Length: 234
Image (cartoon, rainbow, N blue to C red; front, top):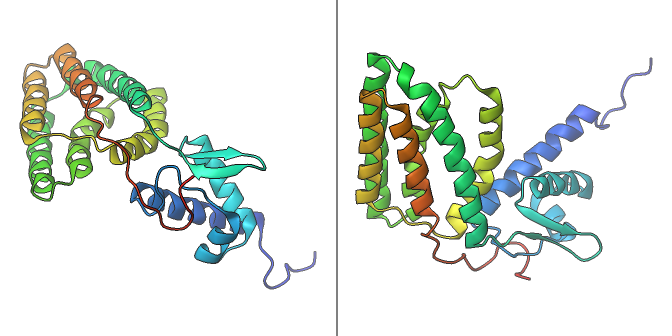
């Protein structure tokens, strides 16, 4: 068998390159470098990222599958424009999945795990307070993530975990783009409800607290970000 010529890329190399491009584009969408509605042009992206068109198209297709990019052949490729109705739907599903996890997990927590949850909640509230000081509303909601993760990390339901994993990135984009606002009082009330439910080993109460908190956030959209980094808004 002849050796692979120098400079030739294997299928694995191409896969790693497209994944690197996907991650870069994803981070740029989430941090606002690429804003909602911005058109993504292959020539601009190849120049910006220093790669060929093939890994860029592969990465964009994967982002389209995740619901973050819209692709219309021979018309446009652009970052999606999230709207409050999509956010409400995503939060409803996210809340239902976490509620299912909480109802199954909380009754079986031991004392050490409840103590751990108290620490997780306290740390999360510190994060919310720091975010409030800088008025970083998305960071305030994200700071509460470990409280939800605590429950999910203890579920034995791989289907539920996979479903949440597929939803979280899109939901994060919605939250950042639509400026969902979480106050310190709301966060403290939520964390307190979850901890008290855990102390009582009340799975239904924990489930209700998670679902209700996320349902309240669905009404917190304040409108999308503007601007743009690589292309132009459609």
